[in-house]
Image 1: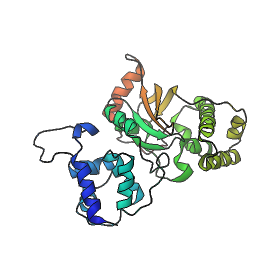
Image 2: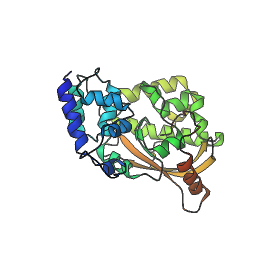
Image 3: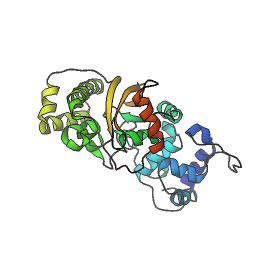
Image 4: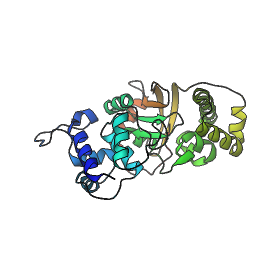
Length: 285
């Protein structure tokens, strides 16, 4: 691991970002041209002391998860992200999927600007990559798991607790939508081992999934009307919209409600309540 080069690279990327570019207030008396160290740490979900040690060329080798978080916080493009992993002497993970996936810069830029509505970026297998605070307050943070269990589609058919986010009477609808969407993803990816393994596992573990898969219904989920069960606000009726990356492997999801509706009023309350008194829930993708 090249500590000094890694430190210099992190500082150079930090210096070029303005707070407004990442949804942070500019504020007076800024002594640095870009972000402060503690702001990078906050965006990456790290302690300020840990990040400071990295920029000083000290500390242990950062994990792949830490590097992925830093790449997102510093808004690195694909080449810069790969360079970061090389400097840290870590294998570069796949760019488009999995918990360490590199978020498409265009989607991340839009997410930065969606500050008044719940929004998050997911993979085509419904793995949460990054979300804004309102999305975390609405659907909960992603579970601290890796592998297939990081996918909401996988958990939907293998973990009954993952369904608590929707009213029970809505579960059949969401099951059909998830399976039809996965059919489209499987066709788009071709003979992709990740999708093949997931389908085989779900067919084996869930009779409901197997039955729906054999209908061969196919439809990418672009929009949907949802009723989300919130622990403090009750059932919130919202519209869910999707914007796809160019290769289709990532999606920006955001939730909205027409002005004057109860859902709109509940979203206003959500921005006040935030994530207080909430336990981690299976996040919706």
